[in-house]
Image 1 (tube, one colour):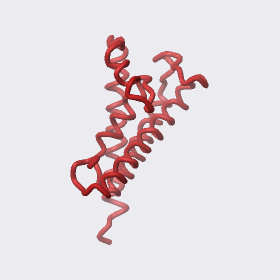
Image 2 (spheres, helix red, strand yellow):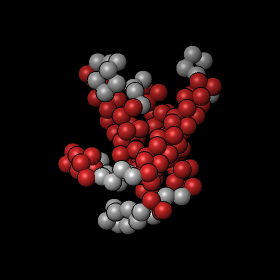
Image 3 (cartoon, one colour):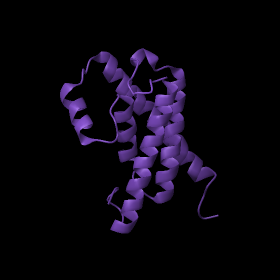
Image 4 (cartoon, helix red, strand yellow):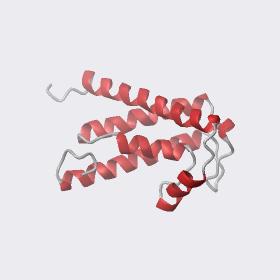
Length: 138
């Protein structure tokens, strides 16, 4: 269902795990960027190296959950990236508004792709961690 590889019962669990992982990764990045209580960004200058570390940690947690659930990681990474560019994960209207009204200049593009790279590195670390230390056959 969520990953296209399992039945509807397992797919719903995968989907919930993916969304939860995305929200957790977004919450880590939001907390590290010192956003205000109204969930508005102070600007891209608020994203610092600590946010990159939080993104690595978020990607690591995402992949540990998805790898154990045997689900895909794509939805969680997309949710994390969408959250990093300032979109609420609660409404489709917010997502559509970001696509229609966003300012896709070089700074925003670098922020999006930088978040993707940081999350990808965290995801790779989680896969290697799972294969080396959490081997299911042993």
